[in-house]
Length: 132
View 1 (cartoon, one colour):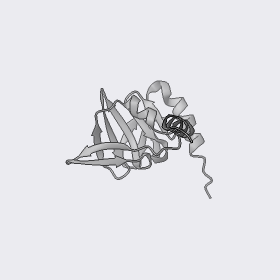
View 2: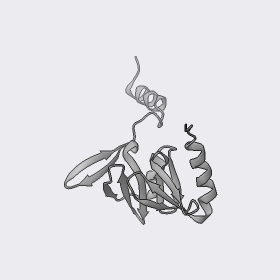
View 3: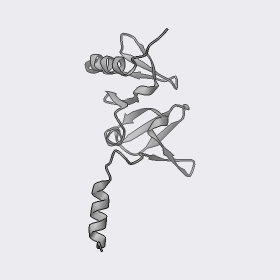
View 4: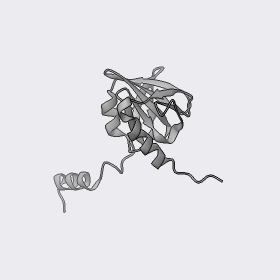
């Protein structure tokens, strides 16, 4: 028979962090809403606060840094600027010599000068589609 300490340690070590579902909780109109990465279009950081934009066009404010939220999200989220983290699945258009990205929600996100080539390569690789 296992004691509680052995069971808890084994259970925690068997579970990997990639298997757990990530939900970001936000407060809106006195309610707590849990956002999943699939519905997040992009995030905009402003100091210790972050605006989360969804594919439905809604915007939520959370009191977490962009860096701390980036650590929770998967590889489909790309840091394109010190203030922006985008979900590559929702990039619809690259404009102005890859300096701006248009998101599916209609918003435009700026790409930092130093990251233009890197972001272009990532998006080219992610969006390899066969068109007829």
